[in-house]
Image (cartoon, rainbow, N blue to C red; front, side):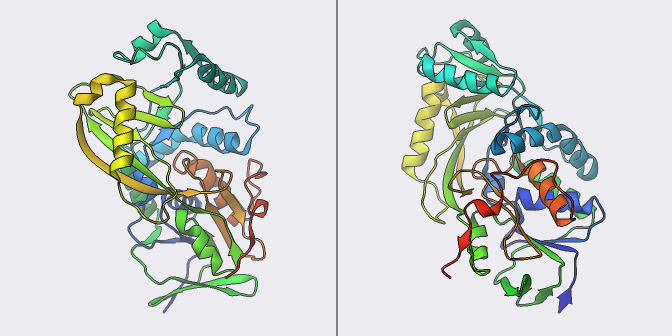
Length: 371
């Protein structure tokens, strides 16, 4: 049986759903199809951190997407709340960066200042104001007051409901999807349906590279496992995000603290390990020793869509007229989803995107597939 939509989005993570939301808001007919429940992979598993950006000074591909997305989050969250009735937990909480040596902290501060971000240098006394009980090894740090967060599961629930309210068709648990090249276009079918979309967008996270093989295109997107531990305390010892390099603790208003995250090249094996979780718990205690007595509520793992340069691939697929990709965001899929979705929507509707895609387009590392 054939069904038609203007645009078919394959992959119902946060990037795919946000793209569907942007398109449907402009009157476009959209179908989202996913191999399982939408939003149940890396989009759900992350910690929801939203670092600030400065769109005036953004000079790198990362900074352009991050800053433009950051500027959208407040309004975007309000839109979702109005349409769905669900609060996604968006709030500005600030973030403290700590390091065991002054050079590390100074390097991070210089990077933020170069970007023109609001940043405060902290001595030990000021650190203790933000993080009472901070381990005495930390004597200097930095504070980003504009750092924000959302709660991933709530955001995805709100986003899914908002999409449906705008008429987006969402098909879950669709097995055996076939993507076949028909000249310079593609044809997508499942055992029970032929999808007659004018344009196809691949936003399947860590699985996108596998889908691209059927088109004869090698896209270097592969899974990178991240494990997270969730703690509960009677009273939060801090209210801001704490970061040390690529590890973090994210406090929620209800007394939960997310501790993350590992980075493991373990293929498509999504499970927790004793080594991974024990390392996260040791990290938490090394920052705030009183977390030794925190309750371990649960642990989980997700598969990030990694790329060689940790940047996403955005834009049309070379050699095809109606295929687009938004994948490879690695650790930044949720935080960059508003700008990514806007770029993809503009491209599929024949409009020039508002930001440069230099360093983000598919031509930088795609190659003919061996398959």
